[in-house]
Image (cartoon, rainbow, N blue to C red):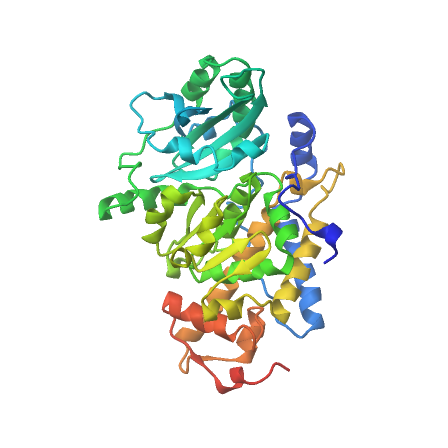
Amino acid sequence: MADSEIVNDRTPLLERKGSINSIDSCNKAGFRSLENDDMKIKAVIDTESAKYGITNVIDVIGDSDYMPPDVGNGLDNPDFADIVCIFSVAFDTRAGNIIEWYLPNDCNVDGIEFRAMASGSHRVQTDFIYFKRGQLYGLACFENMPVDNACERGARMKSVGVLAVTYTSLHYHMNFLKKQVRQLLENPGSYDEMEAYYETHKGSFPTFSAFSDHFDADNTKLWNNIMPLMKITHPAGCFSQFLNFFSERIFVLWKLALLKKRIIFFSPPPIGVVCYRVYCTISLTAHRMSELGYWCAQPFFYVNIADMDNLDSEKVYVACTTEKIFQSKTNLYDLYVDNQNFISDIPMIQKLMCTSYADRKKYEELCKLQSQMTTCQNGGINSHEENETWFMRYFTNLNDRLFRTLLDVSKSEDKQWTIEHMHTVGLDPVNDRTFIMELVDTYGIDIVAAPDTLCCSP
């Protein structure tokens, strides 16, 4: 990859362009039906796979849950009445990070001041942070404004954020939070708009102990009843950014996420784009195989040294940090990703960190899909800024094909997993053998590796 093609932490995320009306018109006139999108995805994969004698990697299945997300800002949309708490955090030159205001008044916000303002934020002008607080998820927007004030040492820093039961709709509050943090910097103590926003968007508070870091059995059942309601939505441009940044190594993350490994991303501030890497990595595990049950890795998003004890008790998670000390805490993670550098002390994971021939072919397929899905059918507006469902659908169907084939083989008389099966699910018969053996062990799928899987790929 040429240096000019490398996306770094200063590469801005894609912004939504045009007015809401122009985007709405694109949705009405430009977005193809799911069936048409499916045919295009299938055509690309068929063409590429046929060149190499590989059975289709994906069976694209229409699904009403995979509709383009609403691209409005959520300000007047009742679907985003999901806020549990709204708050403002400030940096005080004597006391450090402090909580200066929040609603509702009886909300437990202890520790939120260190999650909503990342370590090292004083080095950047603006940032945004996704984080986990107990069993709730938060989004905060940070800004550092120069001031001619000796008491504040020439800088005023604040974060304005919200807490919600799920993380998938938090990005709809981004525009308000960005505007509000600027207003609070210019007019400290002015919380009227935040109070009004909370009243408009407040949701039903969960009946379980949402601020606890651990669940009992009853709370877990309540939480599982909520999780299936989460729709697949995403911040504009995050999947394309993720794909461009990691290129073919996205399939290393795919394998390790499916294997339920502990993954932590490191980067100096700004941390917002790195939070999106957590978001996207979690999305790589999506599937519709009810026989395997619902499962999703815990997205911790931003963590700092105060979270180390909590992470040590987690068996699987995906997180990000601005604190380099995490790299030396090898007991806390299976894979440490320092920008584009993958690090692990575990021999099995070191094997999986090398991309295979099949990974490169799948990456080429994704790039072709990205190219074909970036323009609305009519109007010529870049659709990946409003609709990247092709990315989610690709990995959902990739996982469906993989698990469906594994389960079918496990139900067969001889349970023999062969080279043909490896080709069918888009894996390299030689280099991906470790992955498939680890995968069946992780999910308790009963198959037997046939002798031909030990042979070289034709």
